[in-house]
Image (cartoon, rainbow, N blue to C red; front, side, top):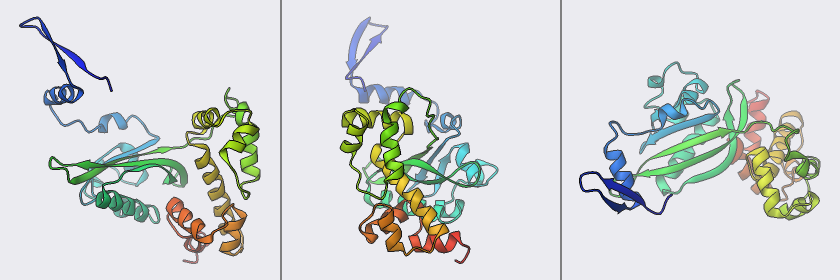
Length: 266
């Protein structure tokens, strides 16, 4: 944000300095309707956008939310909570997040999790949810976005610089992995490595490691009878409890619940 702005008063030819807050207040005082960003986010099909009230009910949504929840029009979704719009386990997880933000007033930032993709299947996204406060300071609702993560092109100019480190993650995710070691493998400083990972994958190196481990855990739970403790260890978690917490936060179900649901035995 600019430190200050200058306004010209035509009638006097004088220039006055306005603070950013004053500039914003003056601008929005002249806008005919409250700006919600809805029309703007309707143009971005890979982003889920919404505003919810203090009861965690949708009051503003973009078209992407409507389509992914299987509704025809926005008015069919307005007034519903996430667990009334999304199928399980997504809806329950999203509502729990909403209630956490509304209760604590603390944002959820850059959370890697699964979202419904246009195909109807799960896909990775990064979610941010921020509280909205009323005039007296109390939490009055929340605003959120979830952005799809797209598969990167290995032909991009940045990819060769991190290719060896990415292969190490993908083949050795069950071992302890440190960003500084991966950066050294790529011949980059930790900062340079993080910057390239963000440009290529849209997530941090740590989140890429987490995503790789969660993908592997999902496959093992769905396709094998390995004990959950063994799955945790095989996917880089020495603590089964930590693995279960991370899995539920990311997937929306506990490992045991996911195994039952994925095999149709729930």
